[in-house]
Length: 342
Image (cartoon, rainbow, N blue to C red; front, side, top):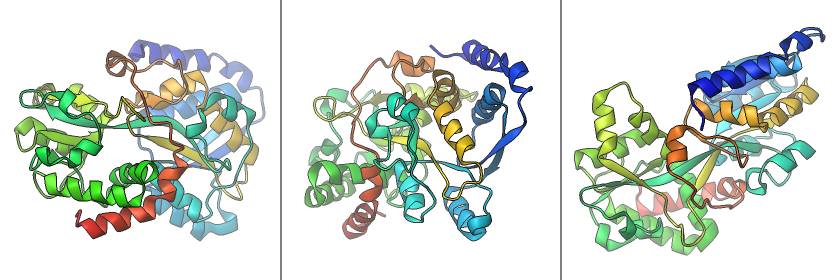
């Protein structure tokens, strides 16, 4: 199980190779990143220590980074773009940001569901969109599946974010993939009918809604819950203690997962270094570091997880290729508009 001591040890192990790396001519790779976690810097430091390749990072939100790369054109220094959610990766793909690459390392290390079919981008950490429930009023066995969120028996009990949230767009995109557009739209309408209130706030606010009694059931990414569990604020920890986490669809396809992912930018001036970075992100050491800062699940099997995630044990995850979530994004947005999901 990953803890602070193991994290420090992992960094130290990689840093031990820095003496050799320092003898190699300095090189670089330029990353445009929509992730903003301290652990990512530790990850890049570890990569530099192992390879001698200097990492330069420019941070921004996904749309800003896409627009910047487009504006810079052929003169762009960007080698790698990192962002979160398959929907955002797809948007970058549609704007011609990525180039396809072939890597035996990535093909061997990453499950097929986490690899774009044409090698345009790859998933390196997993985000589970879980269901949260009031421990006092809900028996989790009654939930069962995402599909049941649309059941009339949960009328007035569901808290969930707005339709412009990319996480919800990808969840609906997965419903389209598994059930078709017609059934997915019926599901979305059913969820709207069961909302406890109009959508508002972020994922943490949905979990707080359950803790406060505003709703009995909520949908959010798992790591927002773990943040509350480990918060320095006693009120946050108390709120989390009132709420249970449930991984739906264990009797069929498994719980919906999304990704933090990256791809090599079209026209990358340091293409070989960019590929080497992506391959490093799939290593055991990098997988621990990549996921540690945000309580995400590693993508590579057998890599240690945080203590909180280990405590949940094993559960089934949907192995739908994440590229499909992006492909279905436009239809998901149209469905949201038709059913009045604000």
